[in-house]
Image (tube, rainbow over all chains, first blue to last red; front, side, top):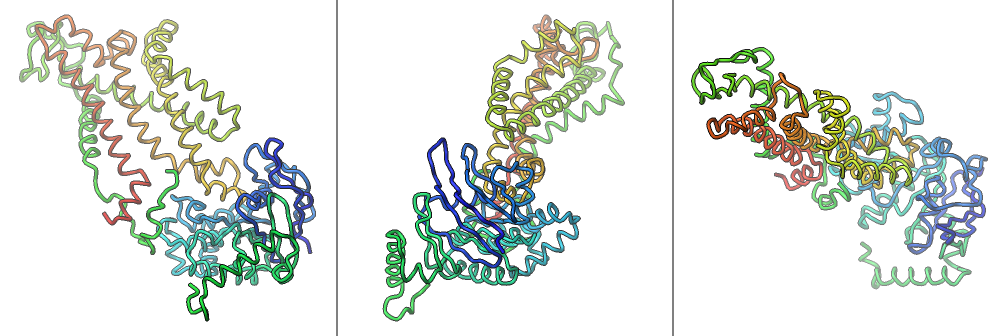
Length: 268
Length: 298
């Protein structure tokens, strides 16, 4: 069943097009990877799907969430979608958390907002979510401030916050780019586990082909604001049709070979 | 407050929950509090006790120097100066607090509005703020006094309006900075509305800046009150004021210099005290300085 579908999505800043005619659909349990270089419009597309484009940018086309076109909808209606039907996790978990608010309260925020939970119920649920994202000592950790926990732990908090209200779509905008490689692997494993468990549809945005290929089943390749390729991951990796996808695949293969000299003992 | 704490990302790996918030006490906080406490104590005690009633005159001891019966001497009518200093402290503290309150009631909502609203409203508010800042508070007070006559309320309004522009400016700047932070965007992606963002994210991240601003504004208000009273535009007689004590003692300064010195000193102590207090509060409250201190284990 389709939860989120966008057709002919274009984004422009003062008539200058930044994203052109992007169309794709996300079904329940879909895992879609959106890949492209920086500036290709990946993150703008993600923000548009939440109705949060920066001031001055205009979107056109259709963004259908749960059978309703939200593109021109007023902020009041978007707010009921954000966090409840569609959630997002950002690249930098440090700046995405309020530095002065205990992490437990930040996870509890959307729960209180969308499910009308009172303070203590919401905190209990926040502790449960800390357990589900495998944070150590949840009862104590919910009272910590973001700078008191590690980068990986912060990203776990951000994931808990995004999934707290059981959204049907999770957009992950380069969620592991700011983390070092070992932590990155842990977060990806957690993400894999959580989407399996909750059945949330995933839109995973990254410029890192191996990371996307490990998690996604369907691949969208974006360049200069356009989708240049779309297909199952295996097809795109083995038989890339566009020049750009071919370049991506070969350069990723070259990097992977370099990273594992003869036998691959060194893959950290 | 912008891009906070990057340097502590790797430094602090685990939760150190028993927060040692007030790590190193700041000396300026202590000195400032003591100075201000002296003034406040004078004002509070004056509510229940003064050495003499305000209108008590001692014709035999006019322009007397400090002595056992008159700790701060007497003025040219033989009135006790210490009594006047105490009552002047009450006036200063009262007008200081009220005008800061007026300034914040006007300035904070205006600044938040400018930061939260669109470009058009923001520019309009900035324009108003600039005009009020450019307009001298004394001139504004003179205008109001000409229209409404000299009274405490007029002095408070004039000072409050004058200071509110600065408060609004600071509120707008700090709030705009918070609004551009990722965590505000993150809060919006969770469906948080604009009012909740103000309450849950913006205010908690700027209140310490505003508190420091409030202490500085209090100092400005005390000086402004003294100046207005000196010019005869502040609290009308018989209510005593340091500014008017200065003005009355001016003609006899050659004979009784302490009559000028002591009220001047009182103003200076109040203003220096409150400024030191502000500096100290900034050191203690600033979340950035605070966390850095904690990260380095001081």
